Length: 494
Image (cartoon, rainbow, N blue to C red; front, side, top):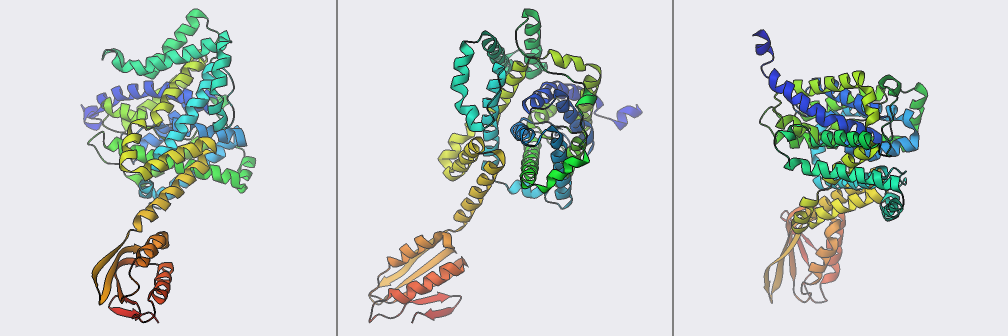
């Protein structure tokens, strides 16, 4: 009876934790393999995300772990700096997140344009899909995002002439088909997550038919953990490593807090405390960095599964971390049976879900500027790299906001042979200077002009100088000078 009073929702949280564990297991392994690190490191991050971050306050039902959204960035970092440097990157990212949360900067991540975030995820999804097609065929992928995309036709041509590659691709395609079609299965069958069912069936098929496909390489949980050496911290003096850390921090924080906002819409429980959630994510990443594991973010797939399974408190996500720990400790050899094409299929499906195809067409119809930012951000990530692509998206969103804020209107209040009275209203900034001057030049120059500037909310120095210059040269000889009126002060052009 005392246990019921202490943990009134233990039954619901226990059942939900099992569902989340089954959803998280194949994703933890798949994200690690796609990131170019040992599979066990994905489980380590899932364990830390469940037990460490899960115990902390912030978002009560959100579940954290390795995310497909960081796969491309982690892969690039490991290729550029080596696996030992990953711990330093993740550790520093975690400390920065803790600091930002302590400074109450978590809420400011909600100010990031949704188009930039969706463009970022779309770019990641495209690179992830392209890269995993090579993994599904059992061949090495090109390093650059552009190379991955342009090399796909050649990959498919080569696969047709290679029985091993064709078998591997077929297994990956079957995995994708099973995940997509799982939602049409009977309700009792759907109690098992589609991704887990697909991996299990692919594993059984590989064993039963002795398929010539690669499987996950296992080296043991303790052997996979790599505490970063002190010498690795010397890389913090290089701009390239600092830029990578900045990208990790920005993307991991934004993805987690946007996920939190989405999860809040799924339940009527306590709302997310954004600064505390950022501290929780930072603490988890700090621990992951110390262990040399993958970075973590809040993951919407696991979080929504947690809510839909009936979770009521943080206990469900903590227990899911315990189940991951038990699996990693008691059944590590099971990982070696999983075929890599099946994991590639799972991640291709995850990458496809990152691309906001359904919202892109309505966004183009209603807000073409935002749609353009989304597309440019995605294309920049594919063709350049993750960090610079996100910076380009942020720069475009700031430029668009500045342009939208610079609304200006010229209204002719009265026009008669005796003179013209006009009024400028809105925000006069240098961004709208050509439009302002074009409108003013259209006013008649053979009659006295009185221009009222009192309707301007903002008038920058460039516009003021341009208005004064226009007033000086506008009036023809024999016509009264232009009068500029602002805040009851009349200025007459010489």
